[in-house]
Length: 79
Image 1 (cartoon, one colour):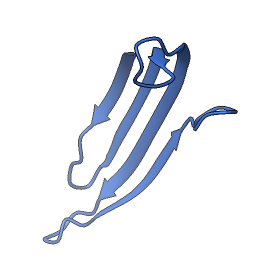
Image 2: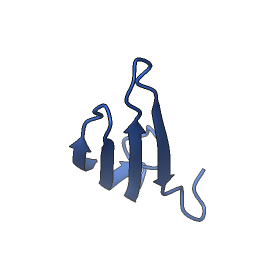
Image 3: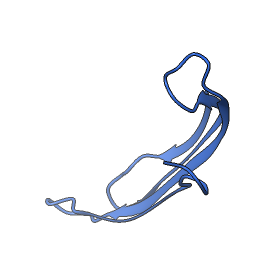
């Protein structure tokens, strides 16, 4: 399998917004079972993560954030 990853990061800071976006893509082939003669099956999968937040000024430095994750799943006939 081959995995490719890209990430953008703006770290948290007091009194400001932050951001993180990450995307992963996986392609290649796997065998249908552990048998050496098992047929190869194509793989195509992806994952996306996004998060943004704001750190409130003051002694507590509380951070409020929103996150989003989405990933592909198995296709028809997958076990």
